[in-house]
Amino acid sequence: MKGEIVDSKVQAGSFVGRNREDVRQFNLSIVLRMLHFAGTVSRSQLTSASGLNRSTISGLVNELEDLGLVTESMGESSSGAGRPSLMVSAAEDVVAFSVNPDVDATTVGVVTLGGHVITKRRFQTRLQPTAQEAAQIAGRLINELRDELAPNTKIAGVGAAVPGQVRLADGVVRLAPHLNWVEQPFGAMIGQLTGLPVFLDNDASLGCMAERNFGVGRGFDDVVYLFSGSGGIGGGAIVNGQQLRGASGYAGELGHVRISDSTSSDYSGLPGTLESLVRRDDLLEVFKLDSATDEELENEILAVRDARSSQAGKMLSLQVEALALGLASFVNIFNPEVVIVAGFLGAVFDYEQHRFLEVLKANSLAASNERVIVRRSGLGSDLLMIGAAELPFRSLLARPSEFEFVRAKARR
Image (spheres, rainbow, N blue to C red):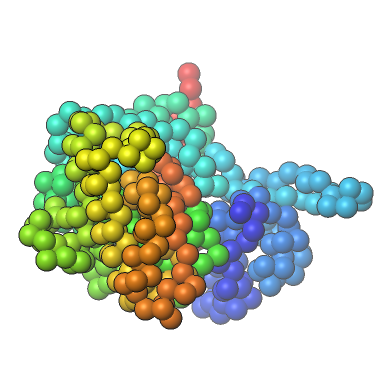
């Protein structure tokens, strides 16, 4: 889908600023956002999508290039003859660091402004890390990766995807039950260790927007997203193009919706919820694994599907039904165009797709489910890296010429 401009409902010419500088920043933002989300596009595509004239687009692209935020290259002529188009891309030497702390590992990645994960490191932990321990690991990995960047690479900051409730204003983790973190200033800890600006948000909320902007949710305005990790199940909903966040930013806890009279509790202590019935730990136990990546767990699930192991197969069938029941409620509530399942939920969905869709349709209203489609995450293991990087990129995209980068150290 790269090269297709999305999110261009608000055109540059529709903005009325307080002064000329506001208008200029807004126009720069529109162009940079298009390149950030769409990838490499031609100047003519930018012109038609933005509503600005050719000379204005030329001036904006030139300014963004002078700022080191975009690059230009000669494309091929679509007809095979004539002058080739000038193609514009977000600069690949503008990067952000991404952090994802989890119960068994802390992962750090480097993501470019064009949405590419250029490197990623996962540091496994045998015991559940404290916030301080996870911050120390993240800080060390960030500093190591920073030393490996090309000289003068422009660093926008650090984004962290946390499996829990985050107070967005100051980067404090209010509650991450699976990690046993309560009121932890995780963002400030990383900032002190790296000297970089740090931003935090819930992992599922970030994954939701990453799929909508870069993955299988592109082009859809009404999306339900469900994500699973070792910390449980989270999610998000996008309605008419806007993500629902709630009064304090804690909306989207779809895993805590009660779907059963079971007394089994989820990681927050609530009984009978989707998270309590579709548990990663249960699968690890039945497969006799201490820990596993989503890819490793999927391989085990596929092996069971082929061999039809009775114990593991029975558990997976129960999880398929519980997942479909939960999503049926969300289909009734949000009437989405697409439902996206990520993390190990993608493999659970694949295990018995036919049964999943039967249960989904039987437990949702016909008018609500008749157009909905279910898709697996398109970003795979890069999902949270891409989602977290959007946090430091947000300020850059808002006012491109005023943003202050931190430069990578020149190599000696």
